[in-house]
Image (cartoon, rainbow, N blue to C red; front, side, top):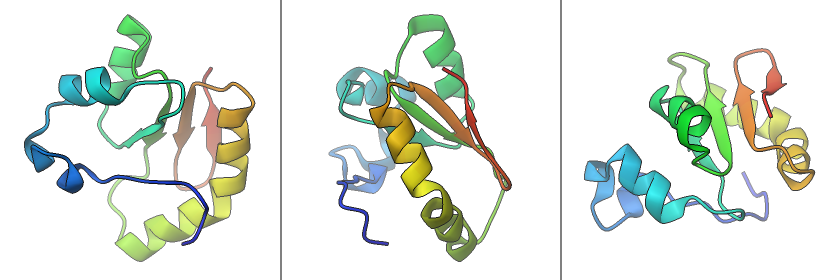
Length: 101
């Protein structure tokens, strides 16, 4: 998928997948970075601490990679414009995109 945005997977970070959620939040939470995760700890941190600053929470359950990529492609423009419009916390499930804040 070519979207014109940069993305980094945790595997590409210095500590790879050993990077803790709190380290990710502290190191990469900014007004220009959207953290994308399936982990329910991130929405909890967003609600409690206001970080990460921007969060896309994936609540699809287990999907094969191709299905997940298709969901991203289908919803990318809406999600991207929502973040650019000021949204901070967005959830994407198998059938919808929910703007939480």
